[in-house]
Image (tube, rainbow, N blue to C red; front, side):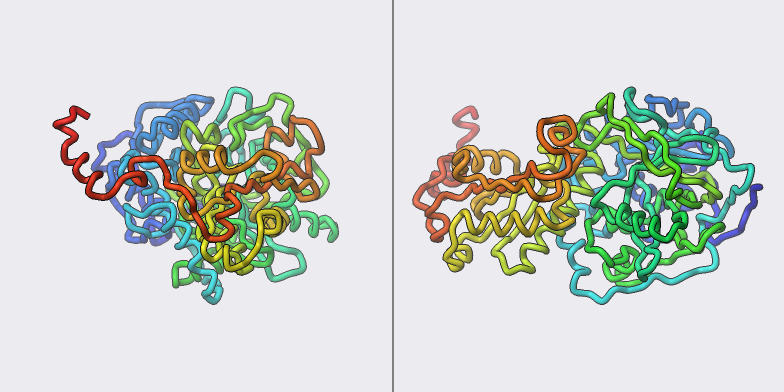
Amino acid sequence: MQRLRPTLGNRLLASRASRRSLSAGRDSSPAHLDFRAFVDTLREDNDLADITAEVDPKLEVAAAIRLAYEQRTKAPLFHNVKGAKDGLFRILGAPAGFSSDPKFPYRRLAQHLALPKEAGVTDVIDKMLSAKGEKPLPPVHVSTGPCKEKIIMGDDVDLTKLPAPLLNKADGGNYIQTLGINIIPHPTEPWTNWSIARAMVYDKTRMVGLIMKPQHIARIFEEWKKTGKDVPYAIALGAPPVATMAASMPLPAGVSESEYVGALCGSPLELVKCETNDMYVPATSEIVLEGKISITDTAKEGPFGEMHGYSFLDENSQQPLYTVKAITHRNNPILPVCVPGRANLGPDETHTMIGTLASAEIRHLLQQHGLPVTQVFALFETQVIWAAVQVDRKKLAEMKTNAKDFCTKIGDLVFRNKCGMQIHRLLVVGEDINPFDMNDVTWAFATRCRPSMDEFHFEDVPAYPLVPYMSHGPGTKLTGGKVVSNCLLPEEYEGKQGWVTCDFENGYPEDVKKRVLSRRQDFGI
């Protein structure tokens, strides 16, 4: 059964059209609150490639997206996906990859949060933490919205007829969900969790999706199993960008991301009720899948090309089956797609969003416990497995502590908290080191961290099982493999620096540097 429902935002974008017609009918909603408006903003910034040539969802779409990450080109919007029918669906790749403008690499991420285009990663972290001191602002429920423009139910639901993309030649199926928001309620507590968890098409009406401990979706799933009832769910694809950011952030248990978004924006998010259950989804979502997750029925999920840059051929596990009872969507909807891979070649959303937002939550955690931490950043070049922790050395000296005690405290806090789930190495550096610069952090690590004596290992903490040396290396897979690397010399714990750094910036007086810079042409350099 298919139904049409009139809403405020009706519009059709022809897939074979001029640039002008593709951008016609721009919604007045701000880009951070409406995915369609976000896409229009990319186009206005000349950071969107409108691709009208037919493209195959079997590997071709993903290869083009992966190339866009690695070459830092415009975000590709595929208007003519082979197999799409009745406008269902177009595909946008790399919505939070690096911008094609090297002057503003974080512009797409900034636009998720209504920040200016010149905003950097520190601005993104500060913005996401700005709601911490604010009162949670519950969403408002509206009667309808753009996501209800078309409704597919009953026998008309057929996932196998949708052009869900195959993302890697080793993948075990077509992944329709890589960048949407999984919405599930707690069965006994007033908490609805929003998260991002992948799902692939299994058959006509079912998907199989990864539900992995210690993520909140797994904790809630276990609580539903105790009730003996299947789990009501919704997946909002092409949700408001700010909501996708909140769903990517490892917020504490009990915090509803929809309320956090309200506090972040200063206004409540508009949600609309699903057709077949009591879940509420962002009203402007591009596509909504809804139904129930079985607490008993499972199927093989994977392999899948993961955020660490590997698709292991033996990587498949029994995961829960999601029954899709209804699909609602906007006219001519857009499916956002993330194609994970090697971040050292080109970071994708599993790094720019998940890694950056884990950094924000770790910084907040350490500062809340009174530690002199100024910044934290999960380094893209390390597949966000390593995070640099920058400290104020003068305040550190006031603590009258030492490397062992200080690093042990940091490790105990981070590695035993959900926000530190994916991080396996913390590198403690001083304020003379830029924690966002891999070259700076590597220099400190190589020269100030003495192997063994400056490394403090944690083997009794939860591990992130997707890290390749955990899943396919020696030792236990679910615990340990974590370390805090002290990249501070002993004198730095006393607030001292008994050296001059030997580089152009630090090794010469200002007048000499200015004179050399003014004479570069004379010198031929």
